[in-house]
Amino acid sequence: IWSLGATLAEMATGHVLLPGTSSLDQLWRILGALPGPRPVELQRAVNKLHNLDPAALNHQFPLEMLCPKDLPGPPLVERLSRHGQGNGGGHHGLALAQAHGHGAIGGATPLEPALLDFLMACLQLDPANRPTAEELLQMPYLADAGQLFTGHLVL
Image 1 (tube, rainbow, N blue to C red):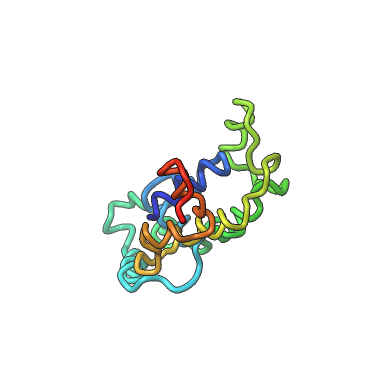
Image 2 (image 1 turned 90 degrees about the horizontal axis):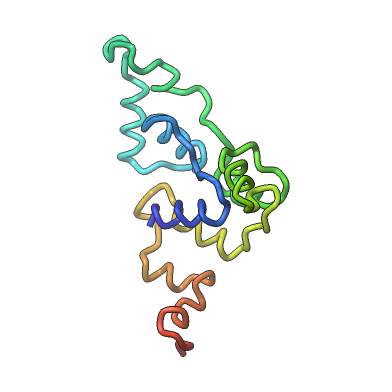
């Protein structure tokens, strides 16, 4: 479900959702974009990262990577809500999309509220809080999905 939300968000906005430079950087970007309570297992992993000694890892990972002072970027709902409102924040996908003749972020149509709700449901940090595929099919954004799949209205 997470992958579906991330992929749809990237398709809808024309840019990479949370561009990370490494697995650790990706983790911090996700945590920065989705503030709030963390699943217990994830919080344990974060605590272990904070307690690692860079010297014990042959300084392969600087302390700032193991325990960043600030998590990067604004919350995800804010990023997606700003799409199409002229405040793209310099995402790499903007230049790429514009080079290929597509609008993205600043010049694009804002995401419709039903899509934003759908994406945020998919991108819940705790997998236990994410809807199932069946539940997603009941969301307003997919109200016409039955017709699309069968070729006629589902009553």
